[in-house]
Amino acid sequence: MQWIKDPQAKLDYGFDWSAWLQDGETIISQEVTVAEEGITITDVSSADGAVTFWLSGGVHGQWYHINCHIVTSAGREDDRTKSIQVIER
Image 1 (spheres, rainbow, N blue to C red):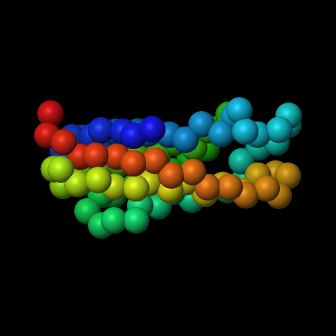
Image 2 (cartoon, rainbow, N blue to C red; image 1 turned 90 degrees about the vertical axis):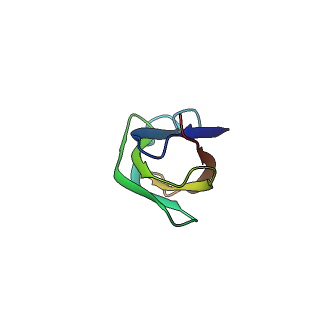
Image 3 (tube, rainbow, N blue to C red; image 1 turned 90 degrees about the horizontal axis):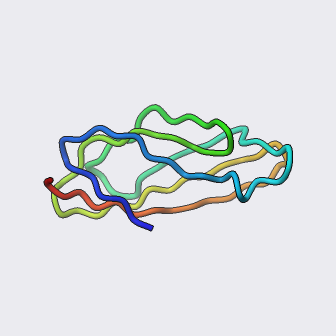
């Protein structure tokens, strides 16, 4: 899956882990990173099996790869990566 974002927009995005988590398991820590420079990640949080974060900036036409790493209450760890393209809208 990919996302699209305007360079001037500051919007929230998320990774939904709820279907992957086992009954009673929760996310105890999360880290959201971007491989490329030029876009900013802020305000990372988790609730109800989802990790939410805010993105700002980015260069028109550029693709960015956002990675979410979680650790759960059961000691499991996993990563997911999604792509976002910055396009003037």
